[in-house]
Length: 362
Image: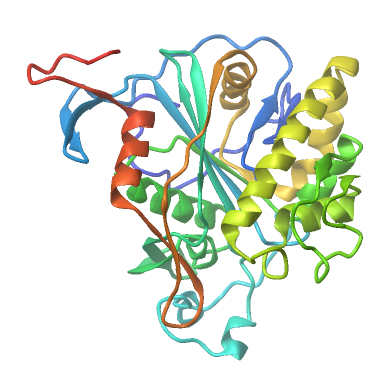
């Protein structure tokens, strides 16, 4: 990232195809873990986007960690290729989610929604990385944009809709990025990558199928996924396993997120084994995945991420606690617990300081 970059970019960097070795944010739309692999050993690059200004997060005095990088992973509910042309909504249709809209109006376009939203957080100073999955049903401030990207209104709605109330492409990614940033006390987010639903099949096929134990009732979704059985998922089963929600188990997004995490564990292991056996494995996967992906990252960005994911210490997956309820229209709504949100933000992005401004237990 260039120095002095401010705010969210108005134009998207073109992806650098030279020396691409793999772009498999393995499984952004599935589980939210990113594994990008590029040819060659990347040089270390230190980023200093943060300041030493003392702030209060949840009543605790802190200073921002100096060398943090953040990458937003978006798994959309769009089927097919994200590179395909989509029907552009009108200004009135862009307001869907802020006002009551008829079924006919909602069916006139399909930018898609963000089904999986995960933030990859890399600490260059401590050589660690962590994941922060964010519930798609989180109620937070979301901007609506017109067909030209012009701001219309800000409404407290599901975070998933931040993708829908834009163009279904770069503007949708940026709008989701902005909503996540503001939710996390205005944390700066460096880049994003989004994948369509069908990327699940592409990735599952590339590793020969991921094995999982079926812990939920899939009888109304996919009868071949029998509860209690351990199954090596074929491509269609993989899509049902990591994407379906309404007719599976208790129907909650939390239940689906658990399955996505289990799939991720098996997938990550298989990606490592395949790469060890075949140095060109990732090139083939990237070629197959390319049309199902939208990203603002350059080859240099991906190279640095790869080194961190492969070599740094994994701190695990953080969780924002909260309550699941139904909103006034009967839709799922997740309300984050403020104390939990503050704690997560503080642990990932800040160092605590004493009354003299000295960092505690750095």
